[in-house]
Image (cartoon, rainbow, N blue to C red; front, side):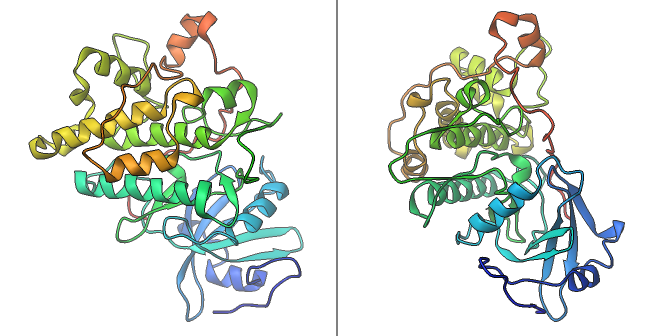
Length: 339
């Protein structure tokens, strides 16, 4: 592996721009994996080394140097099997590049490869990664942008949380913080964060709940449409829950999993607990992991979720419009496919 050393203050291997250019075939369009708020991501191959994902800061990026530095500082200090591993960086002239382990699959919300067992495995892995960030890492970290496109799957379908550009470090005695710059993705942001800039562990729990419901249903909260009601996925799940028809939320691609039906309903209930409107009503990630690991534990009944109306419903009910401050330009959800 061609490492050119370490820059003072950085804990990551430093690669030359020439090495990155060679690894990606001069950033060939055929190697491009995707495009995010940070910039384009390319597949690459280091000489006598592993396949890599190369994240190149775009000069027109709405994120920029602050997020680049934030990601380097954070992810270099975090080590967990459910977090994407960073291999190094390149800082040369105006070029700012991060090198990650390559993940062969995209996000976990949908796909023929995902039977119920794999979905449970993915949900558990995401929960373990978040619990590590919130409680067991050297730094106490709030991710702030947990969404489907920031969960990557390796060749064995193990989930890896990625993209720590928006993450924030919390002191061990801090419970919440406030920001004037609300960043994130419509459909995954908790109400207290979207409306007041308040974020905490419970903000990540809300995002996890949305993601859990997406994985179970195979539907996306941000693009869900219900013909009879102005509901998003959370609202649809809530209506089904109240009517005792929550099994209808299950992804039809799961077939008729009679043997796991009760288990799936329990997962939906956990998702609804995580997306409750009030942060104090939501469980912690410690609670979530405990619920996932103990099928005999009794779950409380969820209260009404936040943002249960879709965009059309919010527009029609302007008095309930709570998403005016939501960032809407980071929506990068995609179907699962080999890459």
